[in-house]
Length: 109
Image 1: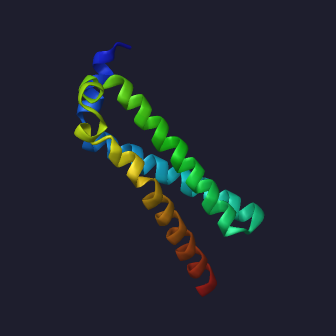
Image 2: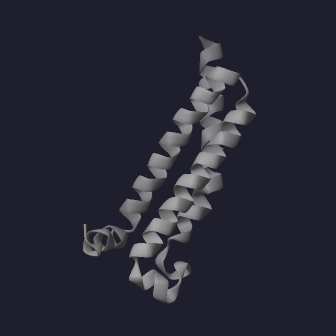
């Protein structure tokens, strides 16, 4: 694959960032639920979700940074790549509340 394919993905910006954020949320949620079932410790699951989100989003940011020529010239603040890094605590927070919601729904039944 040549750089033009990745360059067109990076220029897609908002859609690409949304897909990356959704996949990070989905992966961390699945791992959190699996951890919570095995250990019954929600804080351990939340810590692992934070680690998964951090790894996924920072790796994605670094990969996108490598293929975006404009970002390398003018910095990350110009391109919007910083949004992925700023969403790490937000996605972890959503994982916590989705886990609490599932617990409350199970107790209702």
